[in-house]
View (cartoon, rainbow, N blue to C red):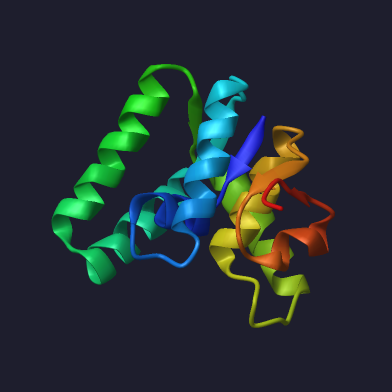
Length: 137
């Protein structure tokens, strides 16, 4: 299972994103290899919101349609933030005084640990600080 972060979802959805072609190639490879994907409700929220602001409402809706379709077909699991996950993420967030680590990132780290995910589809490097491997070359 590979965790998909918002940067990958946005790059995949927005043709004008600098990482679009790379994201598309990685996503197609993961689909061909039938790799199960994991993301979080916070990542879906952040991605839809960013797409709405940068690319328009229609693009954000198309993204939500992709999430719904991939979830329905069993390719994707959206992990929901429970009170326990929230508390663990808050604890982790308090431990790291760095501008590159968001609260959403901490939620992602907690859910990756709980799901035993070691690899991520992302374009930002803060996952490496938690020992996660980027699947993007």
